[in-house]
Image (cartoon, rainbow, N blue to C red; front, side, top):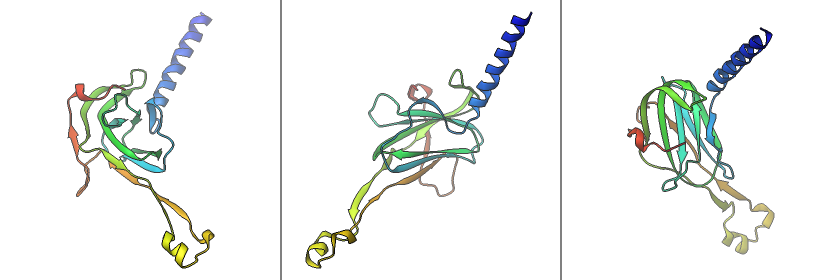
Amino acid sequence: MSINLRILKSVIILIILGLIVSFVQGALVSGREPTGGLNKLTIDNSQGELDALVVLTQPNWPNPICSIYLPKGESHTFEKMKPGLYDIYYILGKGWISTKKAFAQEIEVGKIDQPIELVSEGHNTVESYKIVWDYVPYNDNEYITDFNTVTVTLYPVPKGNIELVLIEREDFPKY
């Protein structure tokens, strides 16, 4: 009898842990978070009415970079994005099942209509001809890198500049 009780307790603990993982903000579902860049990309579901599965890909690349589960009312920021073009796919749904990496009920499947372009550019604070001709000391010259911070919302925004388009489920990337 004590063995069955231990098994039951173990099953209950696993179920509870599964539920906790299901409700973690920006929980990584597959792949790895991007690294090596300075750009920031935020996926905002803070005013969304449904939970989301978000898949980050690069155009014409067969495998997604990563996918995250994003509960309604939350957002997630990828902090170290390299320069480049990125496609963002999403599924809005109810009843996230972390063990299956899927929703019990898919409500909407879509993507951002255009790839998101992230750019990092470096430049000197003093133009090079001024350094030579005006004898500006080298240490007065700094190298600065400009980078993008982009936010994509998964809910309608009045006068927003990103369009969400519906796609067929079979066109959604495998994650």
